[in-house]
Every structure is written in structure tokens, then in C-alpha cells.
Amino acid sequence: NQQYDSAAYYYKLAINNNPENPELYFERGNAFLNGNNTDSALIMYDYALALKPEYQQAQYNKGYVYFNRKNYRQAIDETKKIMKYNSGYSDAMLLIGDSFYNQSQLDSALSWYEGAYDSGYRSASLCHLMAYIYDVKGQTSRAIGLYKEAIGHDSTIVDIYTRLGELVPGDEGNRYRKKAAQMK
Image 1 (cartoon, one colour):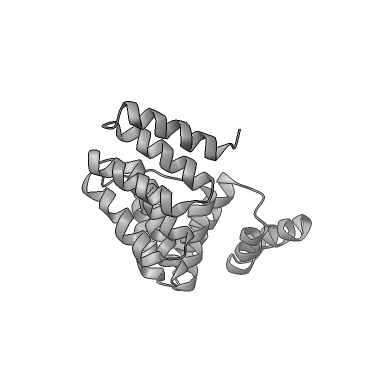
Image 2 (tube, rainbow, N blue to C red; image 1 turned 90 degrees about the horizontal axis):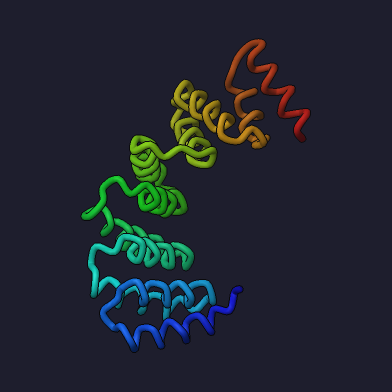
């Protein structure tokens, strides 16, 4: 019910009864995070990780806090720690990719996005981001394929139809341009 202070209080009581339970620290950290008390959230995630170093979600949430603070280098460093325990953790790859992307390090971002994609993660936003980077790099055929795949996940993104209308020649390109015009 978005009563994060109350949740944090009751998690504290639970921790007092069971101080060796990393999940309680993690959940208290989430209550702090949702209540925009990120400093306390980080402390709770650290406690959870001290008890269970391979606690991937706690480590991810630490990276997420730094990402939201626009401290992308720290977000990358924290999130990369997950890869020691789970090299296929696609959410971590995406957060690292987004951190590089927000620093305009497109090649590094693409590497992490490709890792998530290759591990089986698919979404309109991932395909769109990858397509955009390939487009910027001049790899038009790869960009077109990913733009089309993005439409398969979400057919409401006007920008993709617009860009496909610019990239794809002939009648197929005309269809994308018409679709984009109809959607605007």
C-alpha cells in the first residue's frame, strides 16, 4: 500500500528476531528504495550481501540505485559483480548496457545488449536500442532486422516505422512511411 516507512519498521522488527536472514535486509532495502531513501537502501543491500555474497537481486538493486543517481561508473562496477555468479543474468547485462549508453559509449553498450539478446532476452526496447546503435555505426542491414523485430514486440512505436521508411527502399519502405504517417 506504499507505506514504505511502516514496511521498513516491520522489517527491522523481523531482522531483530532473525538477524542472519539476508532476505529481510533485502526487503527492508526495497522499502527504503521505494521510499526514496537510497542511502539506507544501499546499507541494507550491503548487509544482505555480507550474509549472502551471491545475492544477485541485492547486488542488482545496488547497481540500480547508482544508475538512478546517474553514477554510471559505480552502477557498472556494482552490477558486474553479479556476473561472477550468473554470467547469463540478462537484467544485469541490460543495466550495464544502459549505463554505458547513457555515457555515449555505444560500442560498450552494444556489447552488453548483445549479451542479453544472445542469452534469450527479447523486448521492443532492447531491439530498438540495438537497431539504433547498428544504424549509427552504418550497419544498415542489421539495424533493419532489429527494427523489424522491435515492431514484432511492440507495433506502436512510430519512430521505428519512420526510420524503416528511411532505410528500406521501394514499396516496402513506402509501407513503413505510410504506417508512420497514419500513426502520427
